[in-house]
Amino acid sequence: MDRKFAALSMDVEDWYHLDCLQSCNPDTSKSMLDGFVNYAEMLNRHGIKATFFVLGELAQQARETLLYLDGCGHEIACHGMHHTPPTSLSPAAFAEQLRCAKQTLEDLLGKEVTGYRAPQNALDDERLAIVQKIGFHYDASWLDAPEHPISRRLHFSGWEEPLPGTRWRDGFCELPLCGSTLLGRPLCISGGGWMHVLPWHGVMKPLIAAYLREARVYTLCAYPFEFSDRAMPSLSGVSLQTRLRVLKSPGAMERRVEQLIDMLEHHAFEFATFEDLSHQLRREARP
Picture: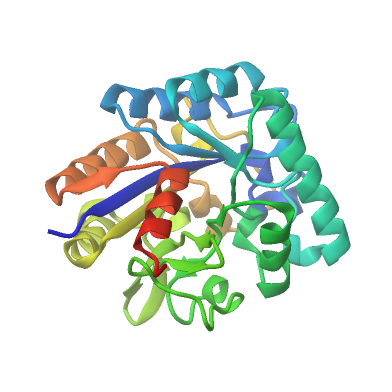
């Protein structure tokens, strides 16, 4: 039987980094990073090693937690220096910020950081080449969902597909978020707003279950605010759509991820960090 892999992750950013809140001048003095710890402890209870894509600007603030997680066997990867979409930066500015972020995390951990996920998943071919040139072993920004705006930014002509949905070339891996369709429209089923906005039992859980029956790789991206014990700070001047995007009820995401873990175990997925998954791709790729 072919092996199947599940890689769980979190983008370590605060609530005020969410792109949908930038127009309302969020109060950055309030933090919901306690959700980062809550998520990690939940995974520790299950014995699951995950990957945490960390903003360089938060590295010192989260220093003790990052060192603790590294000691637990979790992977610390890079989410950039600031939560600025790479496609909004010149290639030179993007490269400078990315080098700084990588070095910041490596200095803190005392070892190489090999993985990257772009803020807002905003990566194109030119900037993906920069990620590889700087020395990362893999990227996890792409969404494997045809016709979705995220998927259209990157092109993988000439790349191998060692495991369905993944990409590999010249020793570098792309480990994507998973996509499906709902009413004919592309949809991310690896996390994000739809994961906690759409009905779980009526929509998201059946979509994920159908995907897992055929897939060999599943990835999850979570966010600290979803697991925070604190209420979302007051928002003013934002649309109803934005309010729904950040809507959270106590314990809701924990329950959904607990059920997701049960589903993955039922379908015989092996849990792995993104770095471990990248090593598996190298083994699966043609010599």
